[in-house]
Length: 145
Image (cartoon, rainbow, N blue to C red; front, side, top):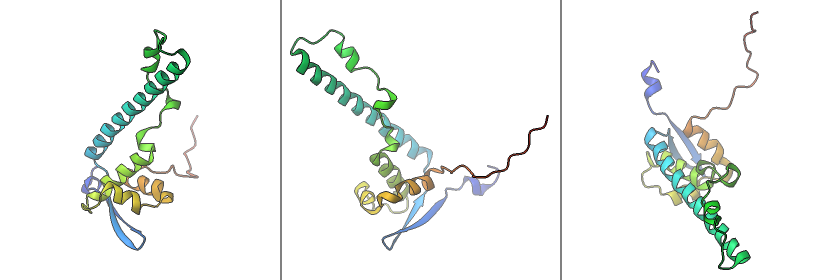
């Protein structure tokens, strides 16, 4: 980051259904807000798991629930039980909205959901997050012995 150009937020113009929009790179504030939403998403997922475990146990055991049931119901989610917030449609929609609202403050989250075609989401999210595809066919220097 020796040059000022590396420190300036980048933007990209996109056209969807004949209308132009400007995407802005996400900032630390955007990522912090995403983190807050991600934690809320995880809390909701834990609550759903807890409620499901208790409801299922009541069907099996009636009112006499096993003593360790609450411990099992409150156990942290396993990776296969949880989808990261940013990998959900809601998370992607939020990141796109944060990028678009910087230059188009009139846009709402619902507007973003209606203007971004589903087949373009991944491509556009990569543009605003700075995620780069690994270079293909890159020649690596030969190892010296």
